[in-house]
Image (cartoon, rainbow, N blue to C red):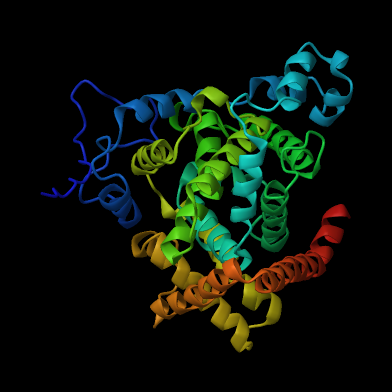
Length: 402
């Protein structure tokens, strides 16, 4: 006899538990986001209660921690890339060099290569999910939006920001992503250094540590890590992609290493997909949301096609409708409404595209020539997107330099 697995329960707040930061609040059946309800019912069924006390405690601790080694470098006027070449410049040099030049002991390079290949296998879906799920979901969380808004130019320079994010995703999914000193490693050094500069600047501008925790803290960095890894993998699956157990483990290992290079404490990272799901649920479910914070970012990202091509372009308007449809399908109508995104008619039609891609993928499994053709198409699309984004970001970059 087969018994149905009971969904994970949505716990009420224990009487002896209080949040340490004003940014947090206990979820209820009335306030639970649509996407989290799906995660709890269909992905965490029979697992830990939601939100998990184990992960809540760790998330709370993570709000109080950032990246002290690199933060001190910025205070002392030393760049991370400079220190890694000359570790004697600072007392933290040896520790940072060891962290940045060694792989985690549980990393299997062969498994990571398998995971990286799966991560970049569907370039169109990858861009859809990165742009419309990972980024839009992040914009709904005030603590993740505020550091982005701090620079003041992100809303105007949306395309350069998107290009840099896309370039980072491309770098960390290369075959040589684990090469110390390689392209992915260099991206991590640069991003980690930028994070420290932003953190230093925010700390000098009345950032409320008691309400938000430290700027760009450990828990917020892990949340971003899961946006770019777990959410994209779940999106592939939701569209119907075949991700094997080895590919899944390889992607998790890849992003564990990338996150450590970015300054995340290894001990705080969830190790399995189920742990990552429970962690992300606990994090998002307990955020005190204020969509007004992320609305400028979401609107700028949504309006990008017509801003570039023109409001009279049917292709630009169609692209915006597709993007909004994907956000609503994955992230939920509640978040999309809060961010002010449109509600396209016929949004479910977008689901007709992935079966065509996966049908070709199935054929390629048995026909090497088809596989070679699909690989060429994927490489061509990557180059086309990269060339297009370079073309349209060049004027903004030139203005920034001036």
